[in-house]
Image 1 (cartoon, helix red, strand yellow):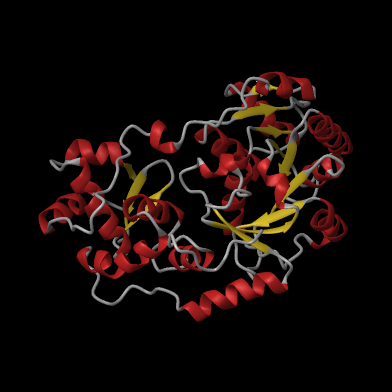
Image 2 (image 1 turned 135 degrees about the horizontal axis):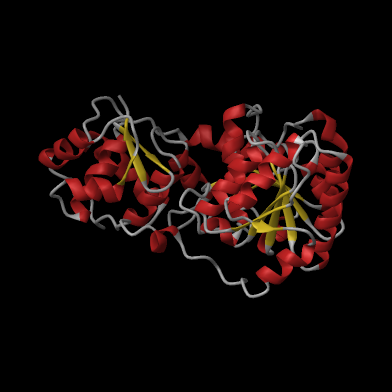
Length: 373
């Protein structure tokens, strides 16, 4: 199942890993390079010249093949399979998100990743009723044909995984696959690694850090047809997942709660914002009955998205100067940027990519860009 380290088309595991681990290359930039040059290997060949064209003076760092081989070996020693976004087992709905991770590590049955999913998220300090509801909801969604995705945290996440174990569940980590986090979920983690599937975009050995969890949350929402929020306070990461789901064009459901319980603040707020009321599994199953087609890709949704030129041509110094003068540390959309400059879409695309690889600007989800000052 694991993709070969190299392939004739330049999109083998080693090439993809080298590109995404290269300096100034995140998922958004990675996919832009693939669209421009056609393969990870061709993108790697172009990186040094692109960075120089963007104004970089020292060489851009590209990992040596030995470093990549060690990462692949470490995954194998941990019992994990590495899948690139070209692999048929890679979650199909996740490929349609603008910042899909180019490589994910997998413990367990990758076949589950090919099936339709619903995400269930909620409070770590969940009530007994909340945990029981999450188990029942997950079990009934599983019986309705959906794999349940969640974040393997305490509380609602753990209950959802437990309810869906007989039918299929996916746990998404904010750390390497060799780290059991939280440690209280050790038994559940081991059962899921054997009977379900656990995934992570982080390399083996990556510790659980607060900054990793929004990235984990975007995988949960990106893989799923819909997200269900069971219990959460207003500052919960579950609301981040709900926001990401809306940005990705997914359905958001929320379970109403007692107004005096802080764990009801999040779902009740979502309902006031237009989330769908969730009382029973059929609310989700009925809504998704006709939604088995793939969502529109970000390229179809974002009106200002554009294709980069196919050849290794570079933008003019004047184009880069024009764009950088309009940027600040406050993100702006590409739409807004193009409205203010006198450049063609293609010339702006080249200039932005070159400056990004030179470390002069940062590309953010939602087709936004900010200068790195």
